[in-house]
Length: 202
Image (cartoon, rainbow, N blue to C red; front, side):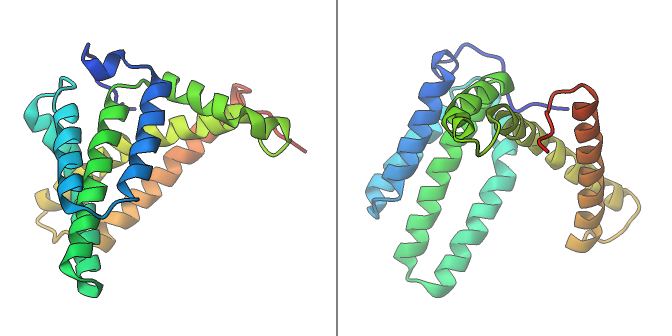
């Protein structure tokens, strides 16, 4: 599998995973408690400055953002259809700032660090008997690892369609993508169980 992590020695790389996740949570709260366009625009500029200083080449950095940013634009357009332009602009700026900082966090934090922090956060729930903290951490780690894999497979399917001269439609791309992703998920789950990583609770 591919990974979203990028080797480097930027300021974000030197910050602990816990501090970055906490900063992401605080940023999310702050962004959704203000509707000021100038303030949100400043947040976008600041998070963009952070993202483009993590050590990725500009082209690769933009390619990483493209799928998520397209989704944000669609959400903003949908919001514009039912709300005044101010509301749509606020949604676009909020989500863009949050996306840029989240991308910075995932690019500068290893999967192992993510799993360790999520597992630690889930410990209180494990003490209450609600779940196993290790399983929660493993689940989050697998989700993060699957994101670049799914995106890569999506582009491969589109290229295969184009090479055969077929029209690319959502149904012709999403169906094989879902099937391949579910197949990989089953294979990974079987491998995890075979190695005894998870304990089954009866």
